[in-house]
Image 1 (cartoon, helix red, strand yellow):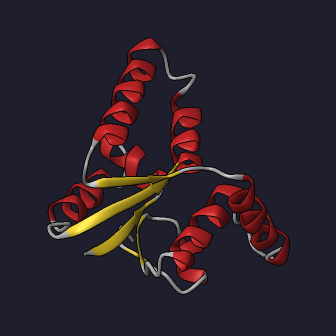
Image 2 (cartoon, one colour):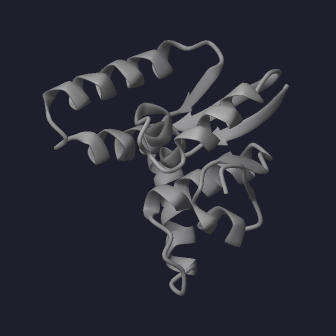
Length: 136
């Protein structure tokens, strides 16, 4: 089964109908038949952090979203381990000229390990590393 990586930008865009990438995220979702979505604890942490101070209704919606992701049999959530953190951190150190977040680096590490070349994201950093950003 083919895999696609879901970045924080994807989850945020799906959650917020007013997000500038909402329509692209929705269209990308519709084209996922036959593909497994891979995301990570780091991405879900970043997602929850982004919505933490948006008020109780948004925060509760974020909790429900993450619970749904965690229980979705079509989604694999890669656990954050020390080894994965260190590999992502090594990429972060190696790309001092880029604006990659540590979460981006962990995500790119997962994508390379799993031979995933497509990301559900609008983040151009993934393109800089040679991946296809499906929401651009």
